Structures are given as C-alpha cells and as structure tokens.
Length: 321
Image (cartoon, rainbow, N blue to C red; front, side):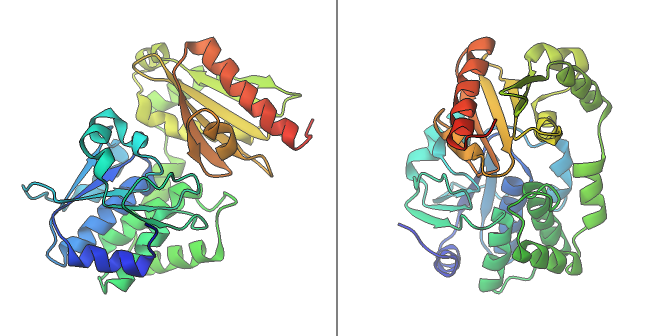
C-alpha cells in the first residue's frame, strides 16, 4: 500500500517499539535519515533500535554521540532508504524482510516489498523526506538531527553536484544549516578528507582502470588483495565510486568491488541520458538514473564481462559512440 508523508507521520506517532533497518554498504543517506528519525521519535517517547547488515563507518560515529538504545523486542519494522529487502543483507532479510511494516524511500527502483511504502522518487535523498516528515510530526530539529540530515542530503547529491539536486534540496540544506547542522565539518569529512589507507587503495585502484566502448565507459576493479595490501576496507570504496565518471568523455563510470564471498558489487555512475538504474536492474540491482548498484555472483572476469554487456546495451539504446 502506497502512503504519503502525512499518513506516514500518523503511522509513526500511533505506534511504538520500532526497529529501523538501513541498507548494506550504508551511505550517509540511509544512516543519517534513520538516526535523525530515531532522535525525533525518541523526543515523542518512542522506543527505537537501529540495525544494519554491515558495520557503520567511523565517519558516522558523530551521529550516535548522544544515542542510547533501549532494550526491548521490536513490534514494528521500518526500512529507511532501502529499495529492496535483499539490500538488508542475509541476516536482516531473514529476520525481517518478509514482515516490513513501513518503508520510507526515494528510489524509483523500489520493489514495494513493505506493507506500507512512502516513496518519493523525485526526492534527491530520503533525508529530504525525513526533514518534511519531522515537520509534519511537530518534532523539533535539533543540531544533531540537522547534522544527520545534512549528511544524507549532501552525500546523496555529491555535495550538490549530481543532477538529482533540486531547488528543494538547496532550500532544505539551507534550513538545516540554520538549525545547527555542522556543515563545514561534514563536508570536510565526506568530501575533502582521505585516510592514508584510502589514499593507498585509490592508487592501486587507479592502476586497474580500463576504458571501453570508444572510451565512453571507464571501469575500476578493487579486489580483496588490495584491501589486505593497504589496510583499507569496504567502507572506504564509497569515495572511489565517482572517480571513473570524472574522466573527460566518460558517460558510464564503474567501480567493481570484490566481496568477502568472492562475488562483485558494481557501483555505476552515469552522465546524461544513460540510465545507471537500467544497467543494474538487468543484473538484479537498482538505484537511480545517475547512480545505481548491483551484486554479480561470478568470478572477476566473468563479472566484468556481464556488467560490460549491460553497459553496452544501454549505450546502444542511445546510439552514443
């Protein structure tokens, strides 16, 4: 059942004892939106726990500085920024995937798996939706809530560089800064700072870059061996995702990352009319027109070939060579 933000507000206020679920490979939007909504509902006396199939990166530690989880058995399951229950990871999909009460999301590729789905596909981030939702519930946006939401807004728009950025995005971001969001430090951490381990990983990753289809596609492949050599980990590959697309003339940028089970996660970023979501959907994934992802259960070269086949099909659709 599709519901709007007002109906979502009513549902959240009428019920209690929630588990909020984030998607695996958590980004600033899923984490920031979940934590912001949890802080807000806690001010209304609600009990919430937050769970994710993967560990949160240290960059998000500031969000939990004042957050203490109560001990209770969840009665309501809410997913936030999760387009498909498979993105909960095996553990939480098994526990909750078949009984999600509410999904709050902005992905057009959402498969409508929850009993209630609040979906705004034209929203640049789920954090924008949460900002409006908090207002509908008459919840004060404190500086920490503002910082959580500002993180979601900026990370899902590439610090306002992506084509999904709208006037509403800028308006909400400005309001969040006015409400105390630590905008300077958030931008420094997520867009201006590299750890030494990431810098080492980036150097190895760039050495793997290859070009295809008259240089319209650039692809990087990160293996488990690279993590071991650099001391980096999966959480740091997020910053790699946009590098291939930044090359002049490239319309499709791909970063493939080897997972612990030997499969590969592909993060696809595109320019213009090339639809990243269409590419990934044919491989069981999804996302947005300009940014999407999928997991390919195959060895390295086969996974690359499978991804490139779908990239070529999408490029051919637009006769771009």
